[in-house]
Image 1 (cartoon, rainbow, N blue to C red):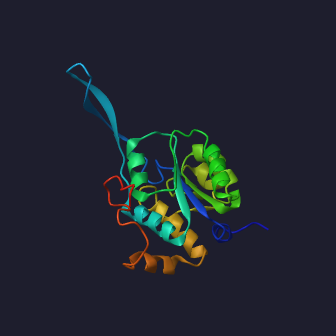
Image 2 (cartoon, one colour):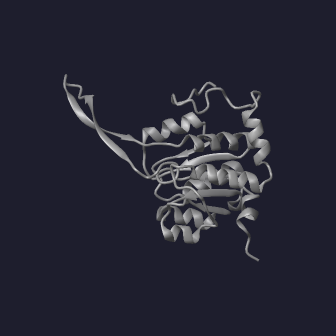
Image 3 (cartoon, one colour):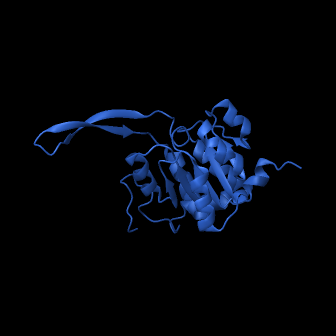
Length: 206
């Protein structure tokens, strides 16, 4: 008997996300910036910008309160991703990953969990190997059609516009803890570090 998306979501202990097209709208803004060349002059260096959705930031807070770990696995290497990960205090951050099952296997070994307990959110063909293996494969509404075809569930919203939040709320709802997690989040006594998702690169001491 085929498992339903909700059945799969009930087992999840770790949620992993691609970045571009999932936590962003997929656009990559590249600008030249002057940097000292060490010879008294300047040279141009590429600076990359991405835009993130605050609703997704809240999703990572909800996961923390619910006791579900989260992380990102992305092919690109970007300081903006590293900064966002620090802000959100993610447990797992893997950049420069062309083959995403390698970090997933590392996470499984670290956490002592199985593939059935991992959810992965993707949008493009590079995500397919991971989506084919994990217990709960989620595609964003803007994902390539062949990616949607292999997903267990597709988010209502596109990447960069709340798709991450869709995935998290679906999982928490399936586990029967969405409402209580939201109430804990808005309670002034919640256990989240005060510096989480403050938009300043995070405070590693908090």
